[in-house]
Image 1 (cartoon, protein in one colour):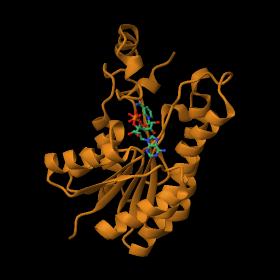
Image 2 (cartoon, rainbow, N blue to C red):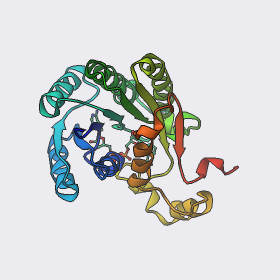
Image 3 (cartoon, protein in one colour):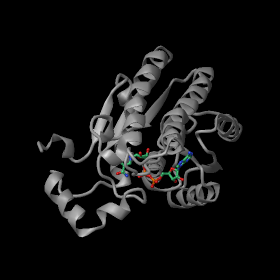
Image 4 (cartoon, rainbow, N blue to C red):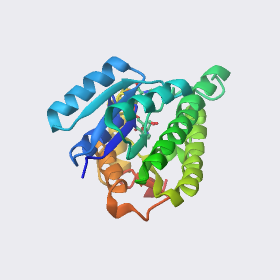
Length: 251
Ligand SMILES: NC(=O)c1ccc[n+]([C@@H]2O[C@H](COP(=O)([O-])OP(=O)(O)OC[C@H]3O[C@@H](n4cnc5c(N)ncnc54)[C@H](O)[C@@H]3O)[C@@H](O)[C@H]2O)c1
């Protein structure tokens, strides 16, 4: 049977690269799509060397629909199929909602919500054409349910993404394509490093996360691989929290 192909957005680094690594270890061929094309190509080469799977690195700003159309076209030309889409690319500017400009608010929604809409709609059309079903994962956040003054734009985009996931799950289920969300807790990446590497927040993590540590990109990658497995065929339209138990702890 030919190897499956996964297209992962924002996968040049961080959680996206962790997801790419976990899927590659399962023999899945990987397309790393990222706004930073140089980093995408470098990470794709690095992953191929480490795992032996075929990879392809491409530049794409997911908030620009023609760029997503080109990404899907190039992926199909290169690999001939797409079995898995992971909507991972996202931004979080951490600016107080009372200080934030309209342009910045719009940008977060454009990337985190519109970007996933473009990718899902265009990739799903290819999956339907291929007739083999598929798996689509939306990387959301605990911000689907909770927020802070510095995450108003982000929480709005991620709550919207959670409902977008459910709508696609309903539309695509009959075609054998499942859609699910993965909501990471506190994961150490370049997006959050400035915060969690300080002594106080690090102590907070130890206290408030029952497993006693901050999460890794591979923790999220393993959850995505689970939902992309054949055994997950009947899991559709749900959000899986992957946070070491953080959200279970009462304030
Ligand atoms: N790190 C965490 O604690 C955490 C927690 C919850 C959810 N998340 C979510 O996980 C995802 C990945 O986060 P991360 O921590 O790895 O972030 P990161 O900033 O380390 O990596 C994000 C990647 O996405 C790319 N990107 C940004 N905008 C893009 C665009 N318009 N088009 C294509 N690529 C783009 C960046 O170039 C970068 O390579 C995001 O959706 C984020 O909201 C992260």
